[in-house]
Length: 114
Image 1: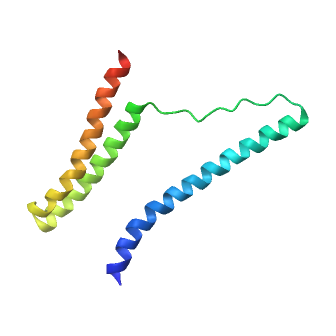
Image 2: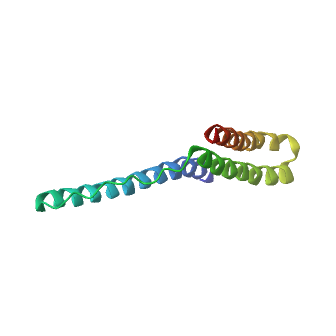
Image 3: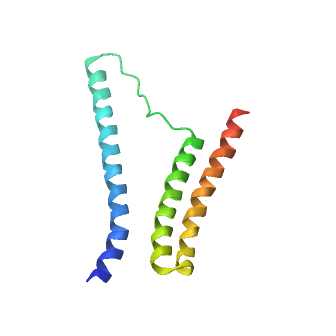
């Protein structure tokens, strides 16, 4: 039974998270639309629609790099302790991906400063 549940939840949980975020974002936009339509009907000045502030790309890359590197280290240490060096090598891909995001963050920050 566990052989089926683990892969199922590994695929279902990220999909559920994306759907929940999408639903909440849609509700937020719908509420703003209703407020604007109500203001137009009453003849009131339509409130300016302010997009949510966008985080600069280098900060997003830095945050992603820190999180992915931490996840990679979190997978590497138990794999190394329990199974040895060879099985733990697979988790180095995750660590290198996180380090790549950190490098992108540094390089894109230098580009924006120029």
